[in-house]
Image (cartoon, rainbow, N blue to C red):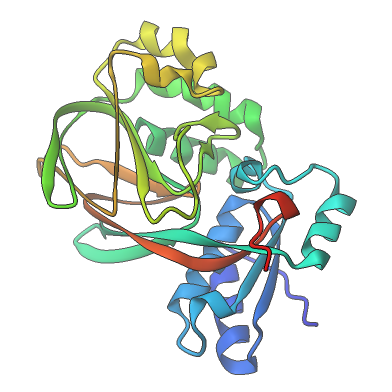
Length: 283
């Protein structure tokens, strides 16, 4: 067993990648939140020693949102979480990868939960800034959810799913992912199945501030998808384009990244994630 502590953003990615490639570790336990888990998932998919599904990833949730754990009903009790990790039961979960732009350079990022764009990315960025100042939690996210309404402008988009144009118009926010929750418990993708080989996508078209405020509560049970402004899609590959002067910004698993153009692809059943028995693969 080897215990290491992170000291800065993306440090977990560096540490885990080094331990896997140089020392052959094949079981990584994360004590942190969705962002730290995201970094470790990226280390697994960017290392060159083992196949990704040979490396087990477990999570003890101590983060702000803990949305990946919510998908699998991971209990709040640390003692119960430790028992789940010790049990070692797992699911082979899908993982997404997105190519994006950061300034003039192209980069890519893997994610195990949800990527958010537009308004969602703005709220994540504002929340991350506050976390760096020592303020975190669901309440901070809610504050930014409301205050961001007065800063955000809708974005003109074209969206392709598996090579077919499925949407053109102005978008308030959108989510694409593997699991159901983000934003500390918001069910943005209520029909997502984490090992079906498909992305779920939710698009909220241009709407009014008052409509958003009135429907915030419906984000927590997924019923917001019944709004007339909402469209949903599934697919293996998504391409998202905006006009050069109207960039669409991106976050994955709560980590703020770059902007459009964006290309998403799902990698089926590629991550070996430790979960409780009811979700695990049982031989």
